[in-house]
Length: 183
Image (cartoon, rainbow, N blue to C red; front, side, top):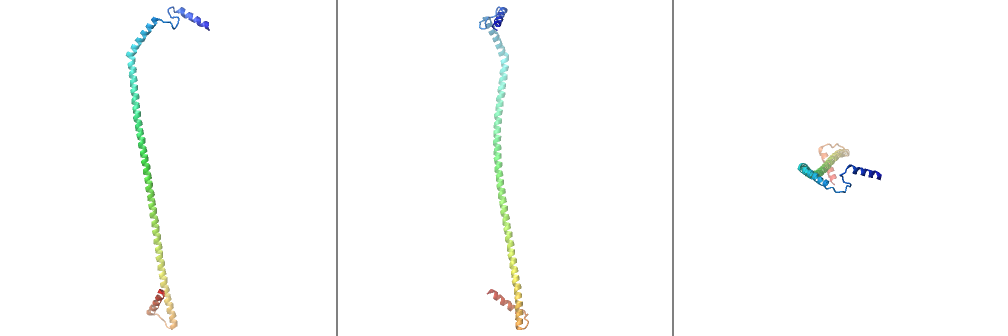
């Protein structure tokens, strides 16, 4: 392998008589031409290429700055919208709780009203029943009195032996029964 490299090196030296023998050898003519080509290329790039490159770079930088500003603005708007949505949500929750409280109060009021109405209706039915019972009792007592008067008159007639039909006789018996009831 080493032999192949030596052969290639000898062939390269034989082919180019003015070429440097080593890469570290200094050649002043080559340095001069390299600097000359570099300066010409630098001048051409500075005159024609750099302005376009700088212009495109500046335009891109401005575009990026504009996009960043838009992103910041949109981010601020989004934050404001989120805050506003949260406020609307909180207001809606408060309104819903208020409506639920009102509905509950209305239901409680309606229930209390229904209970009062039922109580009133029950009291009215009880009062009517008491009046009906009292009327029936008074009617029964009055019926009983008539029967008692008729029986008393019949018994008195049997005892006396004559018939007592006059209104005056009935009045005497009714007055007597009334006195007996009060005592």
